[in-house]
Amino acid sequence: MKPRSRKRAIRPMAGKKKPRVSGGGGGGGDSFFESDTKQRGRRSRKDDDLESIESDDDLADLDVGQEEEDEGEGVPEETADEKRVRVAKEHLERIRAIAKRVEEEEEEEEDEEEGRDEREGKRDSLVAEILQKEQLEESGRVRRYIASRVSSPEPADEFRLLVKHRQSVTAVALAEDDSRGFSASKDGVILHWDIETGKSEKYLWPSEDVLVSHYAKSLQNPARKRSKNVLALAVSSDGRYLASGGLDRHVHLWDTRTRQHLQAFHGHRGPISCLTFRQGTSQLFSGSFDRTIKLWNAEDRTHMDNLFGHQSEILTIDCLRRERLLTVGRDRTMRLWKFRKEEDILEAHAKINLDSWFLVAIINKSNVVPVDYVPEESQLVFRAPASSLECCCFINDNEFLSGSDDGSIELWSVMRKKPTHLIKNAHAPSLSSNDFSYKEDETIMSNGGNMENDRHGDANCSSAHLWVSSVAVCRGSDLAASGAANGVVRLWAVESDNKGIQPLFSYSLAGFINSLAFAKSARFLVAGVGQEPRLGRWGHVRNARNGVVIHPIRLKEDRTTIL
Image (cartoon, rainbow, N blue to C red; front, top):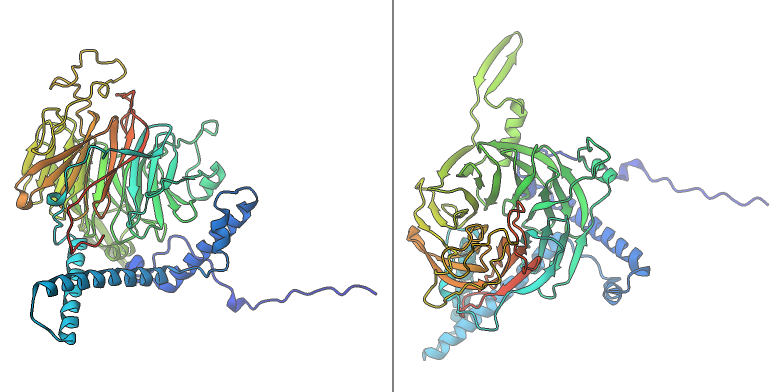
C-alpha cells in the first residue's frame, strides 16, 4: 500500500498579516504618542519572543545564566502597556506610603483627633500634591533644588571602575530608570551594562552585507574596511532604541532588548559627532562635521528634517521635551533652535519639494502661481566671549550651561546674547569651595612627554588639561558637573534667577573626561574616561584607565523625595 500523502492546511489569506512598510509616518499626528498601542504591543511581544528563542539556541554553548533562563520558561511575556501600568501602580503605592508616613509624623505632633475619612482625604490630597510636584519637575517648569542637599564626600568615596574599555571612552548614556547604561569607545565597542552589578554585554556589529541591507551606503573602495569608531550615543526615553554615530558618517539604530542592529541612516557628509533623543518621543537629532543637523524618527525609520546655520563642525547637542534644540560648534557659537512639530513637518513635506525651502509652485491648469514659504525653524545665536565653546547642556528651557577650551564655564539665559555668569579657569587647582580644597596630583598631568615645562600643582599647568571637555546637569535641578583632564570632576550649584554658579565639591579622577551623565535621582554620577580626548589624539594621560567610572553622591534626607 502506498503511504498517504499529508496535505498541509492552507490558511486563508485574509488572516495573513501585512508586513510593516518602512518609512510610513501616516497621517499628521505624532506616531510615537498617537499610534495604536496594539501594534506596539504585538511588536514588543515579537521582539521578546525572538530574544527568548535566541537565548534558547545558545543554551548549548553558554552555561552562564542557565538557571535564570530555566526559571523564566513558561512565564507569559509582559507587554509594554502592561509594564507601564505595573510601574505606575508601584509608583503610586510608594507615594501613598510616603504620604502615610508623613501623616503619621504629623499625628504624633498634633494632639487633635480626626475622623478616619478626614485623615484619608488629607492623605489623598498629599498624594495629589506630590504627584503634581513630580509632574512639574519632570516637565522642567519647576526646578528641583538638589545642590543644597549634596553632602561632603567621605574619604572612602571615590570613582569606582564599572566597565573597562580597551581604548578611550567617547560617550556614555543612562536609561530613564537609572538601572542600566551604555558606553562606546574609539575602537567601536558598544557596551550595555548594569549599574548595580556592573555586568556588561557587548553589541556585535553586523557584517557589511547586513549593513548595506539596513540601508547603509556601500563602500566606494571595497578593499577598505568600514570605520567602527563611535563618537556619540543616545538612548530613547522608553529605553527601546540606542543610537550611535561616528566616523562612518551613518547614524546606527539598535534594539536595546536584543542588541540587534535595526537601521543605518545615511545622509551626513561628515563624521557624526553628537546625538540626542527628544525626551518622551522617538525623534532623534544628529549633529555632524558637515555643519548640518538632521532629524530622524526612530519609530518609523525615516528622515524628517534638516537644520542649517553653523559655519563649522558641530560638537555637542542637547534637547529636552519642548521643540527646542541646543548645539555648539567650532564656529564659536552656541545656537538655540526652535524646530517644527512632527505633524507640521509631515504637512510641509506634502506641500513642497524637499529640495526647495523657500518657494512653492501651485500649479492650477496652465497657470503657475509662486507662493513664498518661510520655514518655521528659528534660531538664536550666542557667541563665546573669547574662546571656542566645546560642550553644552540644558538646565531648563530658558537656561543652559557651556564649557570652553580656555577652561571657563558659562551660564546662559535665553534673554541675553552674552553669558549671565562666567567662571574662568574653572578647573584650575587654586579653585576651591568652603567644604573642599583640591590639590593637584603630580602623576595625573603627564601628557606623553610633549610638554616638559608643565609645573604640576600651580597655575602654569597645561591649558590642554584645563580644557572643559564635558558638562552635565541633573535633569530639572540646580546640580551640575564639569570634567577636564586635570584630574578632577567638579560639582556646581546653579543659583536661581541667573545669579551665578557656585563650586560645591571636586572628585579626583585621572584622564580625559569625555562624557558625563547624572542619575535622574541624583544619587550617582557616571563618567566616560580615556587616555585621549574624544575628538582627537592631541593629548595623552598615561596613568588613566579607559572605561566607565561611577561616583556616589550623598544627599541629605528629604521626606518628600521618592528613593
